[in-house]
Length: 82
Image (cartoon, rainbow, N blue to C red; front, side, top):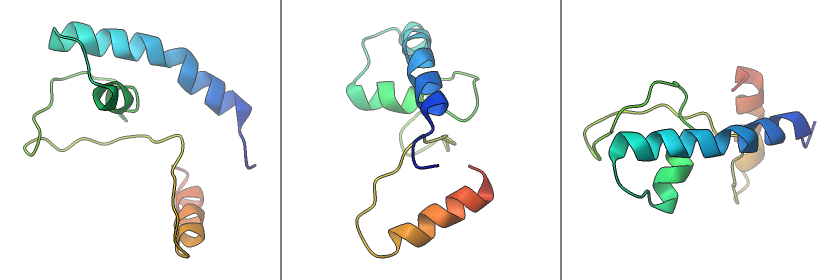
């Protein structure tokens, strides 16, 4: 299905809580990028990550691609169930 409305609603419903938890953990206001990344963490365990040091897994709900290989990459994601 091109648009999974339940998935989209679920992601946006959880986003304020994820952002609030991350802000509490870090102890300062978050940048837009930090808000997006912390709300898309694969693991629910929150930790303060260090750029260039820590490896983090994400669970993207959407991807944007622009070249001819995009369709193949999307098919691989769908097959992997991620």
